[in-house]
Image 1 (tube, rainbow, N blue to C red):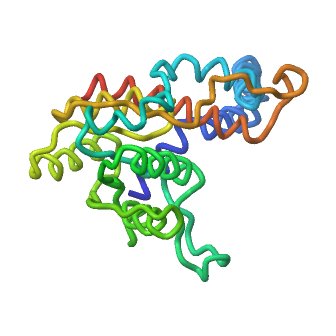
Image 2: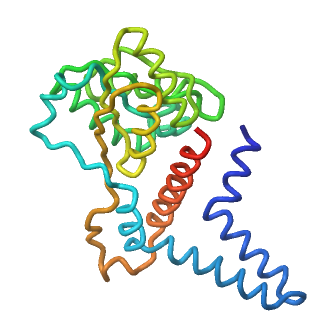
Length: 253
C-alpha cells in the first residue's frame, strides 16, 4: 500500500509537476532546452490547476449525470431497494472529537445527502469503504456511526473490504444480492458518478444515480475565476485523478 501510494502521488499532479520543476533545475546546464520545457510544463501546469475557471470547465466534462430533483426523492422507494453511499477517506485522530477518527468533509457531504434521501424514501442504507491505509476502523463504520449520531439515520449494511470504486461496487453487490436486492441509489460526488455508476452496473446492479457536490456550476469567484486559489489546486487534482480512473477502468475492467 505505501509503495502504491508513493507511485500514484509521483505520477499524478501535482507530484509530476514538481518533478518537472526539479528536472528543470537539474538539467539547466547540461540540457538547457529540455530544462526550459520542463520548467514551462511544470509551472504552467501548476498555474492552470490553481484556477477556479479551469476547475469549473474541466468538471463539466465529467459531471454529465444530472442531479435528482427534490420531487424525485420520495419516489425512490419504487425505483430502488437500497441506498449506497461511498466512502471518501477519513481524518485521523481529531482532537475536537477526543482523538476519534472522523469522515472527511467530502464524505460528510455524501452522508448528509444520503441521509435526506433515506428519510424521504424510507430506503435502507449501505455504507461502503474499507480500511484507510490499513488500520481500523473502516470508512463504512465511521460513516455508519456518524449517520446515526449526526443525522439520526441507521445503517443496515456495512461493506468494509473495499479500497477502490470497483471494489465498492463488487463487494456491495455481494451483500445486497445475498438479500435479493439488485436496485440501488448510489450517492457520490458528481465528478465521481460516471465511474461509480459504471462499476455498479458492471457488478450486476441497476443504478439510480444521486450525484452531489457539483464543481461544474457557476463558481462565482471574483475576476471570473482567473485568480489562483489553493482550493482549486486540490479540486483539479481530484478531477484529473477521476479522468485517469475512468479511462483505466474501461481498459482494465
